[in-house]
Image 1 (cartoon, one colour):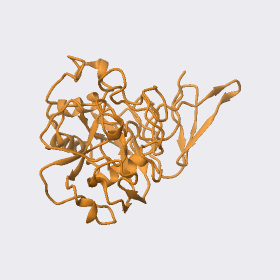
Image 2 (cartoon, rainbow, N blue to C red):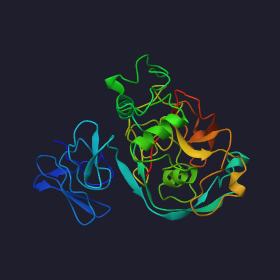
Image 3 (cartoon, rainbow, N blue to C red):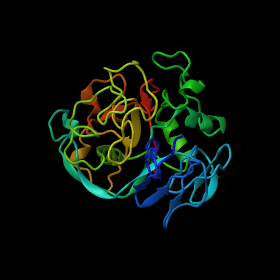
Image 4 (tube, one colour):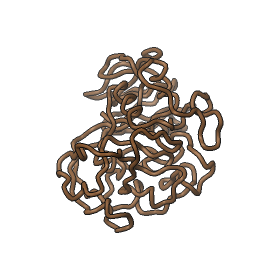
Length: 315
């Protein structure tokens, strides 16, 4: 029987042993694993609604089965889609390419300080996005196929795979529907680094691998299938975030400016006030490893719908 641990790691079960069940502690929330698999969190500041591990909580507590089309937030059932998040603590970091492996748009390396926020643990899935479409708050992706699959979006087999063929406005609309927003470019890189300083990738400096469950695992051009992969296929980074390198590119809120790093403010930069392109981060299933670096800056026309473009939300 599977017992879920408390906190951000949905795939980290409590270990069963001969004399009972172990206790997991994450971010001060103590989980006593019971024989029915329910999460039993205690401590101050946690939500009180809920009892099912099928609907992970938004803000560190237990979760109720609020009903189809609703999720638990601030102790209340509200309309939308439940999404697991990780609390990203406030802090400062050096943003940009310290290894001179990218282009000039990744430099100069500059110190940036970020206020605390919450970020989706996973990229937005087909099932989550479809709930927004079904509710009339989002428009359908530009295609229901993927690179190797004629039936992808709307096919239950791929419900837990990242939604693709969504442009920047569609991504923004979904995040707003859930009560969130797209991350800034600085928030994204800060979160992707997972608390590590001066490393190439979200896990460190080790080269990426296609091995499922690996700490340095990533879905990129050397992996099979030559397409997207299910959420949680590789280990998370230090902030409990999955697929911050590879799988799908992620739209962020910022306009793109190749020279922005030279004038970026230190505290919570919001990006340029205007532009022609929006920033994408993280690389994708079709990219070589240079695109998987935490500092790499992609950009494209915000109306483009592509089989390698997805997103995740913050709040």
